[in-house]
Image: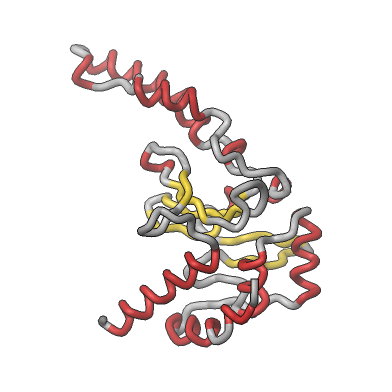
Length: 208
């Protein structure tokens, strides 16, 4: 992709950010070192962002080197499995079928006469549901890139057939991850996602 799409974007973000931190753009050597450590080349649009806009830190998670190792930082950035980014991201989660069965079997309080029996049933249900829903096997090949509050996040896919696209993570609401789509049902790539956010934020800041 032509990096020209990022021309002037850093200045726009700095004007919007005010006193908020926005990391300096990565040098070519820093980007190469980052990719060597994670074992995969990042999607072109995100590479362009890191080189020409910044290393994040405002609106999206920042990436920086700590004690010689690169990592993403932010609320939930630790969910990124740095050692598994070269693995293809699974479009369908490995536990999707079992999670669907469990969702259908959710213990409804109205089905129990005894509150203690409902509590016991729910605890047994949650003991299986939670580890499957939040399994690290759901997110290889993906970087947690931003949070929306209330443990809701968005991920950038870096490996596999969804490479370069953004996926929504509403597992905190009890639903599986899903591709982020625009109003026409088209997948959102990193650049489209970020620039759409920037335009919306600028409009809100101007009161329009």
